[in-house]
Image 1 (cartoon, rainbow, N blue to C red):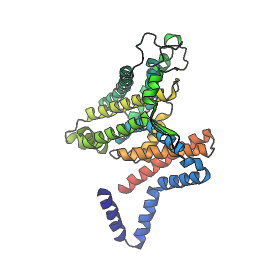
Image 2 (image 1 turned 90 degrees about the horizontal axis):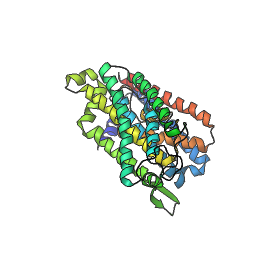
Image 3 (image 1 turned 45 degrees about the vertical axis):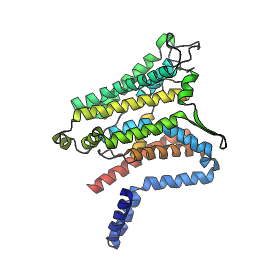
Image 4 (image 1 turned 90 degrees about the vertical axis):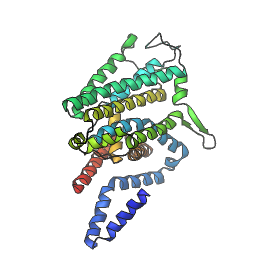
Length: 361
C-alpha cells in the first residue's frame, strides 16, 4: 500500500506541474536514477552477448557471491547511516577468516597452526564462528569508542585500526613456524556445514550452499534490528541530526559504539564463511572488500549525509555490484580495468547521492 501511495503521489505531483516544470521533473528523475539505468542497459547487453550470463549455474554463482558480500555491506551500512565509514572492515574480515581456518584445520594435516585443539564437530564449528564474530566485535567496539568518546572522524579511527589489525594478521600467520604461508587444509566438516550443498537441483545441475540461506536469515535479522528496535530508530536519529538526537534523549555514545560493534561482528561472520568457502586463507584475504561493501551501500541508497538507508536497498546494491562484476568477467574485460570501473561506479554513486541531497536542501 505504501508503495502504491508513493507512486500515486509522484503521479499527482507530475500532473500538477506545467510543461517546463515537467521537463525538469523528468530530467531530475533520469539523473537521480542514471546509475540504475546504465547498469540495466549493461546487464541486458551482457545477456545478449553472452547467453551463459542468465544460465542457472551463472545465477546461482551470483547468488553465492551476493551471500558472501552481504554481511560486510550490512555492517558498513550502519556506519554510513551515521555519516561515517569503516576502513578496517576488510582487515577484520581477513583476521576472522584466518582465525576460522586455523581453528578448524583438519587435525590430520601435517602443517597445523594450533596442534592441541578438539576434533572438528558441529559444536566446535559454532564456537569458532562466535569467536570470529567476537574478535570482529572487539575491534568494532574500539572503532565506535574512539569515534564517540573523542569525536574523531570514523575514517581516521578505522584507518588506524586497519593498520593495527593488519599487523595482528601478519603476526598470526607466523604462529608455530608458519612463516607467513597460507592457512589451508580446513576440515571437511567445516566446509560441509557452511559451504556444502543445502539444496541440489539435479534437473538444472546446480547446488545452493548453506551460506546462501544463512545470508537470507541474516538479512531478515538486520531488517528487524534496523526497523523494529529502539536501537535502529536511535541509529537513524543520530545519523540524521546528532544534536537533535541528544536533545530527544538518545544515548549517542552508546548508539555509535553499538553500530560499530555490530558491524565488526558482521565482518567477523563474513570472514568465517570465507574460510569455509575458500579453504585456504592468506594474509591478503579481505583486501579491498570494504570498498566493495561501501560501493554496494551507496548504490543501494545509503546516503553519506546520514540518516538515510534501508536493508532492502543494501541487498539490491550488493546484487547490482556482483552482477556487474560477473558480467565484466563474462565479457572478457581485463581484470586490471575492473578496478577502474569499480572506482568510477563509487565516484558516480557518491556524486549522484550528493546531488540528491543538495536538491532537497
